[in-house]
Amino acid sequence: MSRVIFHLDMDAFYASVEQRDKPELRGKPVIVGSPPTRRGVVCAASYEARTFGVRSAMPSVTAGRLCPTGVFVRPEFARYSAESKLIMEIVASTGAEIEQVSIDEAYLDFSQSISGSGDERLFNAIAIAKELKERIKRERNLSTSIGIAANKLLAKIGSDFNKPDGLTLIPERDKVLFLRPLPVRAIHGVGKVTEQTLTGVGLRTVADIQDYPGDLRHLLGSYGPVLKQQAVGEDNRALGGREERKSISNENTFEKDTDSRPILRAALREQAEDIADTLKKKQLGAHTIQVKVRYSDFTTLTRQLTVEEPFFEADTIYRLGAFLLRRDQLVNRPLRLLGLGVSSLGDPFRRQLEFEFRPD
Image (tube, rainbow, N blue to C red; front, side, top):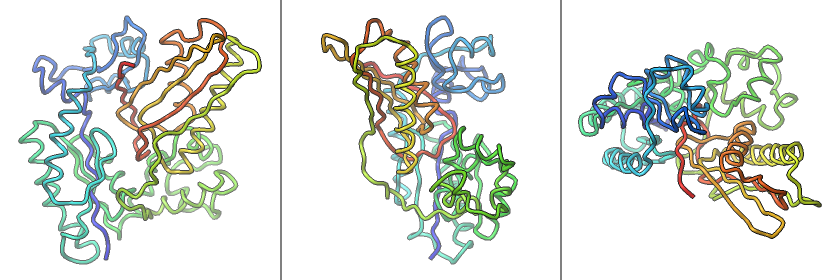
């Protein structure tokens, strides 16, 4: 029996909550994060701000330069979390099996409750998706996008396809043709580095991967055959079927205490690549990053930040770790130890990074 999977994704969640609760922000380019006059990054951007090129994870000063009329709002994670709880209560009332993978995102499995066979079951699910979207809009005054498909991979691609307020169904009979024109980055799990590797040999669209004669192992190692299967829309992951793992970390104890930037950057880069490799092998993404430093007197400090959407690329892990070290001026004397770690592990298949800082 074919499965019926929804992927529900709230639209520009943090910024949309701010615009709903503060009428003066509606229709304006809202940027959730530190103001451009202070060291920080963009946590989230409304669709109005995105038209100026503002994106999550960019420095706030860059966002301010790109969007001079942007309205910067400090994030309030407790409020967003409370809103998420109310939304997920509505989702739970559908009776579906649910896997919540982030504060504003969930997979729903209706395989046991929708009648029909094959793609007929997917089409029969459209009415349920419309009703769910309408109820969230009516009760929470927020819009959501939903993808419907026979597996998680396609359902997630569907929810991304027509944002905001989208509803996209990808039938099994059409999935290969649907995927063909999409860029390789549309396959969730293809990050910046993998994209560069693929485009470097002329593989720019999913069609290029579908038509490639080999299994890509010589380019991507063990991920190559997996990507080939994803490119034709195959994915057998079950809801909630991930290996339970709470954190992944790496650290270096130096032979001599050092504050040499080249040495510390090299250590941090190596740690980020090791963590990213583990995340990729486990098909996990992280929501929280933490740096750890130990000084000559054995004083040990940690700093962390939590992001709304999961990350898994080495470049992102390195950049966020470096940002924390710089933001809190942790390398103010020689270090005995430097560590990097990630936690709050979950589904890696999100393309946007929207940050939420938590106090230590």
